[in-house]
Image 1 (cartoon, one colour):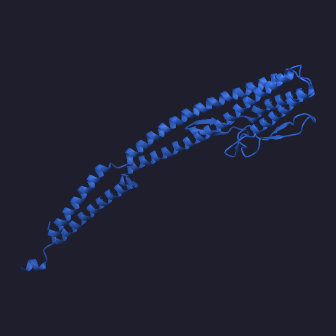
Image 2: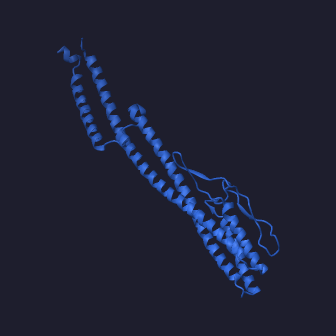
Image 3: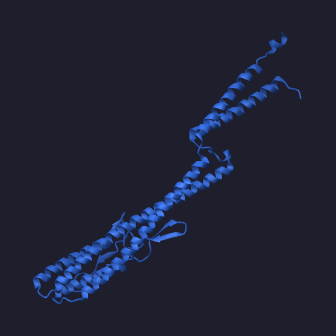
Length: 296
């Protein structure tokens, strides 16, 4: 095959362009810190990187769900603890009212405090978290408990439930779903009834054991809900720790797949720079002869 100066020049320029392309790729990798910046760099590795990124986003969403669910349960736990305190105070008032030595004025004072406890329970029943009602089911923007009419002028008003009993569920993993809300009607109705009964006994002058029995039932109900909420909080804490470990593992895998080895990349860059500079020097000698040189 006949080799001319034009052939040599074309080969030189092609090789120089290829060297520049490699230099540009290495410079781009150093500036981004990634070995794969476009799918054409490594189609197989690009697919793996996309799957890992998707897994990280999915895990982070589950983590956010778990954090929101745990926050909701912690707010519910706080309300249940306060209800526990209210019921114990109501039981103390019931025992004091059952004392036969109490006169009408003393019972009236006890009844006034019971009415205040009733209002406190109503406020707790309408507790909110992040602008949403805790005990309204899925109707979180609607106040669940409102005062209705009183059976008599001296009685406490009835409380009407306007929420729903639907479950509020968070997804905290693949196929893992957890209900975080408490049935407000089932939780508060026995307590409202017990306090109404106690108030009626104190104002009616006929203290008895019925209100105490009802308060005991309401207390058992609250403690049962506390137990369930505590168990769910523990489950969420474990799930959150597991998800954090999973995210860390996937992030490490992603780093191994796409992050460059800076020392190796810099060494490759210096090598390519040397090759390019050498090619330029050699090319300068190849294309040095001119027509005048041939005429000599």
